[in-house]
Length: 210
Image (cartoon, rainbow, N blue to C red; front, top):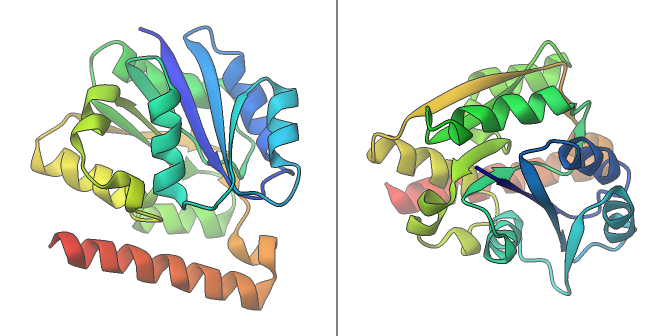
């Protein structure tokens, strides 16, 4: 089974290169697609230099929209979604996520940070369903409606669909992996506001589907 990696990215020039570099080295991965979601920095250049195929969007669609653009341009039956702001991603992390799905043992894997930074580990301990690191069979993604209009609720949508349809899902510990927090990207005030906005949009999506 071959794997397509899809990475939605918005202004992630500092981290996207390392994320792509770890993914392109995996033999089962035949394409790494970065969807540059209207970035204003060098995200597209850094991703291209690291070996990704970049799809540049003129307008910011949000995470769900960018992910679905990547899916539509991908070729393989197994999809791996990764966040663009990961720090410390290794080939082992990628392999651990994709193998259970490639072997047919699982329908979906969900990566959960562990033994990294306290703040990010704690957040994922309480809410692993918000993890953006997931491998999944393509046919599952194609059955979930309205993912493209979901800015931050895409992980909730995947988790809900898996639960409602009794899919085989495995949590995979991603040791020493972390990501850049919004407060670090934008500063404390703007970062906190962005985080609250994200949680609000997730809550609205959950409310819509309940």
